[in-house]
Amino acid sequence: MLKEKNDVIRRPKITNFVSFLLSVIALVIGFVSVIAFEFLTPRFAYLDTGRLMVGFSDASNVDKEIKVEDDAWHAQLKVLADSLNKQMMTMSKEYNTAAPAKKKELQDMLSARNQQVNNFREANVQKIEQLRETKMQAVYDKVNVYLKEYGKKHHYGIIFGTAAGGSIVYGDEGRYDITEEIIKGLNERYK
Image 1: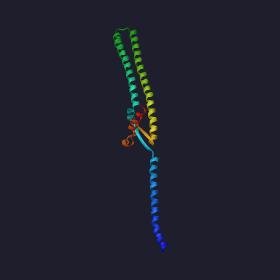
Image 2 (image 1 turned 180 degrees about the vertical axis):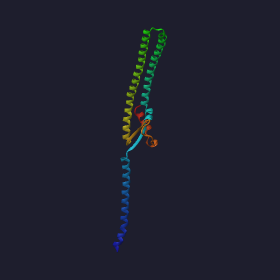
Image 3 (image 1 turned 180 degrees about the horizontal axis):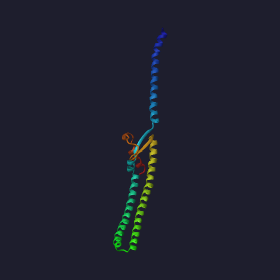
């Protein structure tokens, strides 16, 4: 009878131990699940590339440099166009009273001058486009390097970029939009 009494007393201790053990196992499984979800589920974010290019000081500086070049080119083009217009007015007075051979000469001169203005315009449009492409490539390189480092540091699996007519039509700005963080980081790094 004494043996039965001891068995009864031991059972609650075993039951408590098993309950405690199951609780610890459940807690460990929960903790492992949370950790696994955090590290195995890729994080993603997006940034507004238009806002990024406006907010990043290097991109703004490139735009200002190109505008200065473009304004200088337009001033030169205006001088050429004004000169062409003066020449046309002078020629039109002379053209009406000129002999046929002289008319042909005036037309050829005007055509050649007009071609010069058009060649100047086309060459400078290409020059400005090339300048923009070259200068902006350096900006894009900085942005790409920074985004790669930022993504790794903050454990992002994917960082999307939006564009006008792009593939991201909606994203929760407060949760997934990292544009302002990226602008701030880029401007701090490349002061």
